[in-house]
Image 1 (cartoon, one colour):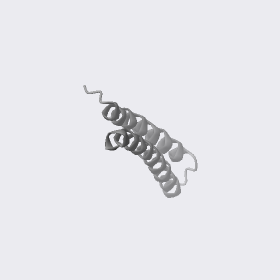
Image 2 (tube, helix red, strand yellow):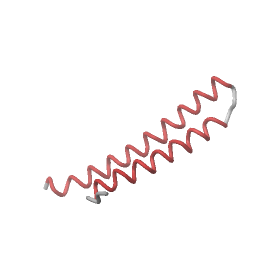
Image 3 (cartoon, one colour):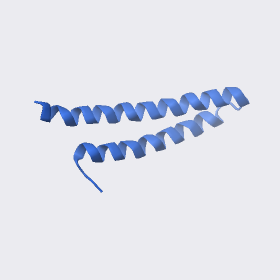
Image 4 (cartoon, rainbow, N blue to C red):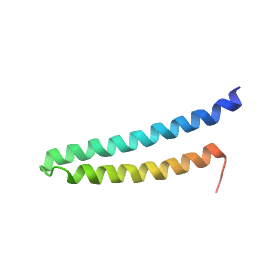
Length: 70
C-alpha cells in the first residue's frame, strides 16, 4: 500500500508547489504595484515569474516522482 501511495503524494506535492509559486508571484506583484502605483505591471511580471518557477520546479519534482535521474 505504501508503495502505491508514494507517487500520489509526489504528484500532490507538485500541485501544491505549482499553486504556491503562482500565488506568491501574484501577491508579490500586487504588493509592488501598491508600492509604486503601477497597477497591472508587477502583477503580470509576478505571475509570469511565478509560472516560470512553477514550471521548472514541477519538471524537476516530476523527474523525482517518475524516478528519472540525470
